[in-house]
Structure formats: C-alpha cells, structure tokens
Length: 320
Image 1 (cartoon, rainbow, N blue to C red):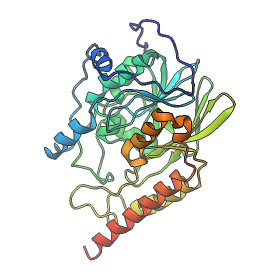
Image 2 (cartoon, helix red, strand yellow):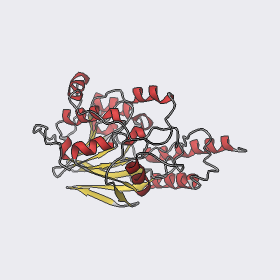
Image 3 (cartoon, rainbow, N blue to C red):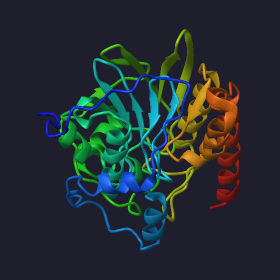
Image 4 (spheres, rainbow, N blue to C red):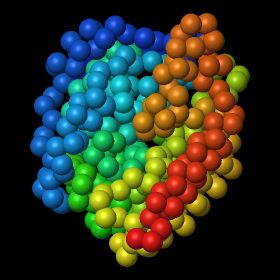
C-alpha cells in the first residue's frame, strides 16, 4: 500500500532535551484537513449509550509533545498514541478511537513528521478506544500492523468474541487488513528501531506491552508501554469462573510478574492518567526536563496496584 505521499516534505526533529508543545488551535486547524474516517464494520450487539460521554471526554484534543529521545506523545487527552522515530521509518503504538485519527494525524504533522513515514503500527489491546483508529491509519500510511495472535484475530474481524471480558458491551472496530502475528518476546525492527512484544493478557486475552530503548546523546533509557491491567468487564462476566476465558486470573498474575521484572525507566500506558502522564509533563515543562519522566519503580508499582485491584474484584465475585 502506498504511503501518504500527499504530505509536503517536513523537517524531522532530532531528539533533544526540549519538550515540543504546539498551540491547540494550530492542531485543530491541521486536523480539519485529515481524511474522513470510515464507519466501523458490523459486530456484536451495540453498546450502551454510557460510552458516548466517555468517548467525547477521552477524545479531547491535546498538544503533541516530546517525551525522551526519539519518543513522542501524539495521542488525545484521554488516550495515548506513541510515535517512535528514526531516519529509516517510524513506529506508532495504538490508534485510539476512530474519531481520534484526525487529531493523531495533526499531532504527527505538527511535530514535523510524516504519516507516510510510519512503517509499523502496534496495538496494546484490541478494544475500540485503542484500536479503533488503526485501520484508517494503516490506509493513510501504508504501514504494516502487528499484534499478538489473539489480538490479530480481533483486529482483522473487527470485533472480539466471548473470551473478551467486555464482549457485547464495547463497540466493534473497522477491520484491519493483513495483521502480522508476533510472539511473546519477539523483537520487531524498523530502520534502526527495535521494539519487543511482552504479552500481558488479562484485560483482554491478547493484551501486549511493548518495550524499547530511547537515547538522548549517550544516555539511553528503557521505555515500557504497559498495556491496561484492569479487571473491567461486561455485566455478568466473572473473572473467577468464566467458560469463555477460563485462564483470565492466571493470565493477569503472569502479566503482573512480567511487568515487575522488566527493565523500566519510563512507564507509559494506554490511558495516560494511569501512569501520571500529566503531572510528569507539567514537571518536565517547568524545569525538571527529561528527569521528570524517569521512575525506575513505576512498572513495579503499576503491577502491584493492578494486582490489588484484581484481588478486590475476585473478592467481590465470591459466592456468585
């Protein structure tokens, strides 16, 4: 598939200690020129209207910014999308909602990068608020899309099955073509970039975290984009006893152990607030610089909190 060749040549910005922040008005102007987003394909039953307000809030526009080295935030206010750049091509993690795509495209361009330079699109998990925009971004960029086997199946068919704890309550997504299947621990390459899949199931059966190194001058850090680990479900789903996903609890516990053991200098998450994105950005903007992002205990604390939340959920299911 051809890339987005209609874009004008743009200067690629090198990693630096400076944060890159763009006025929101400029981002909205650029977003208005982005292509229309197709309607999602049919799938499981329509979700409750309770999703509407959450979608609008999560999709609030946000300025793109530099995190560390060649790693940038290009997502919206409540949903992360991460761009990792190189002279040989870029990687994008998560496409957020279908309606997020104009904002993501605008943010990428506002930073001085090209959508057509994205060569690989990855996904944390296949719910509509993190994978809903992937099909459109794939068409615009010509990038290949890669995911775990279970996530790849959902991405290609456009909806999940009974093994998804939120099956029947979350909207379908536009199907994604030709998703490459990756294995746990497999490293993918784009130019000089190397990014590794770490299976962290539980929230969904195919949930995946991604790890890579990002460098500024001679100082390199380990970045972890840790998938959601919340035991959220549709009504009637029991994590402790479910025929559709009988291994859910074991998967969660394995994921907690995986994240706790990873080299982790900077933690990023699909929902930015979960990993204190905005307080860290505030500190980075007001003098702390790159050190505001670094916390070598963050992954362990994230896993510990998730473990405690699972324990509370299982206690609430006792006797059901």
